[in-house]
Image (cartoon, rainbow, N blue to C red; front, side):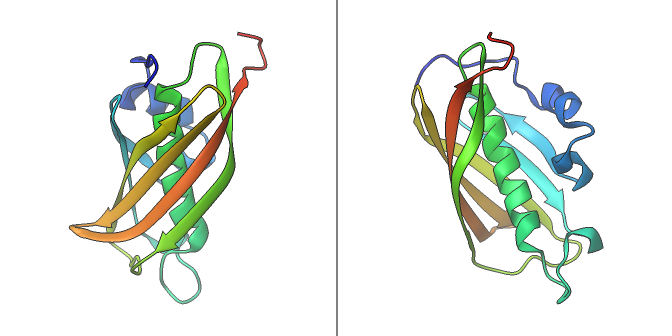
Length: 143
């Protein structure tokens, strides 16, 4: 894998996402390394569909956010990315009070695309899996 950016840390991400969509949903960074990114979300009523279980959009918000953090760690200077494809499988319900922990690892980090797999657990139980493809772009500022 190419050079990484060690400035992408949980502390730096907390500041970066502070007023963003993931932060408003309660998505929190826990760990960032060259090998993986870990984040969490505690399930409450804001994240539920009318049947009382985690909404599909909440699963995606958690998993896509943690995948993004892993991607940021591996971007070359002056680059950003956008998600071009994702596939989510949910294996078990998320219920109020549960802590969902997502772990993202790169499967591929190329010059123009990154592919990241995210596994979401509730305790020891695997409850969801997301596979996401990111398209790498030059930053708007031309960096």
